[in-house]
Length: 111
Length: 115
Figure 1 (tube, each protein chain N blue to C red):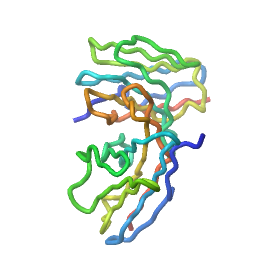
Figure 2: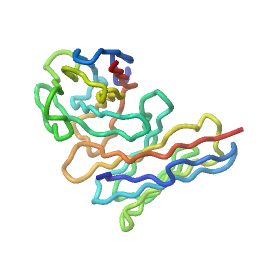
Figure 3: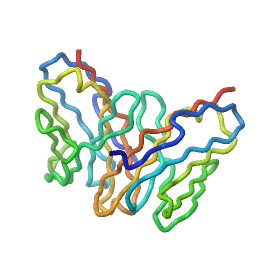
Figure 4: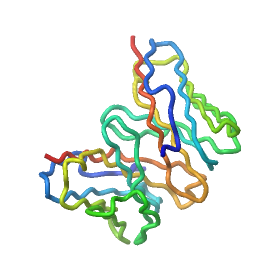
């Protein structure tokens, strides 16, 4: 079963708007990571947030983590056409050393 | 600092042939992971290796698939007697030993097409 589930599955916005993607997971985590994947390309790491952190920023990206609700959100502010991509959350749990990925959110930013 | 290097980027194989995918981790990284991504899906874990040691292969199909990470050279994911259902993108990732505190970095992937 999926550890991470992103919501929505697809999101279409206009350039300049903000995009919010959510991720829910089932078991306790060590950390949660967000990745971006452009079509036909590899994954680019965006942000890592640890289980004892609640919020992190990186440029136009803001990630929050609510361990009580087992959820995280990724906010992209002032979106650009170049932000068009799929976004995945991935969790690292317990003593496991493998990331478990969600199904991703496909973001389309139009001019 | 070079990232995770995978080759080939694209590979076409006929049914029944063998596919070998190579991965060189980032400098200083001793842990390698292989993931598979089917079209329009997320990544599924296959195997986690350290040098000369398979740590977790819980995501590997029981037959035809094998992985190694020798003392010298890249990690190899080997698929024998490929079938159409093996067509996917295969991603390698690497991390330092303290994986719980560090980011896992991915390569650009190897796209396998079985015809």
